[in-house]
Image 1 (cartoon, rainbow, N blue to C red):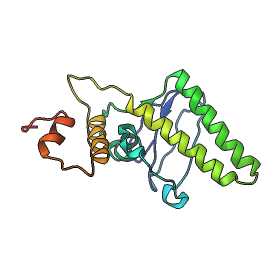
Image 2 (cartoon, rainbow, N blue to C red):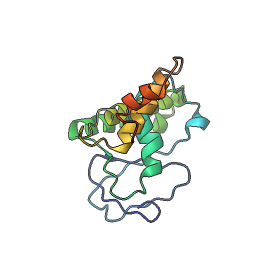
Image 3 (cartoon, rainbow, N blue to C red):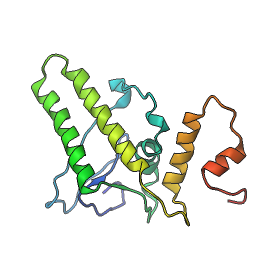
Image 4 (cartoon, rainbow, N blue to C red):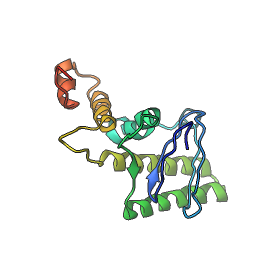
Amino acid sequence: ITGDEVYPIEAGDVFVIIGEMSHAYAEADALSLVNILFDPDRLGIPQADVGSLTGYHALFDIEPRVRTQRNLPNRLRLPLEQLRQVLTLIEDLEHELERQAHGYAFMAIAHLMRLIGFLSRAYSELDGDDRHVQPVPQISKLLGYMERHFAEPLTVLDLMHVARMSQTS
């Protein structure tokens, strides 16, 4: 539950809650939930080229802001193998935070970055129906393209082609 919206959740669902967005879970007795709270600015997480991943923009920027639109078809639901990989990354992160051995903060941030990168790649791999491009991946592809080609002159025609839009869209 976020605000006034209710979303059914299943194993493998990944949601990003930004800022002070309120959220709660209803009827989650049969699920094991993991909440990871972090402030990327406070942690000083280097962005490097993660912004070139369309999934990064989709998962961390666009989807949380447009989630309130009813029938939004985009969400990240990890298949079992990817869910296992994510759980291993989370265990590594928890291990560092629990042990607090010398250098644990550095290692914990590294594990968090691995998790962010993995989830961003997983979202990037989601395929929309080519006959009807969904808005979140479409906007994400556009942002990723702009980030990869920021130093090049970009035309509206170039961006329309990347976003698979026509001049009449």
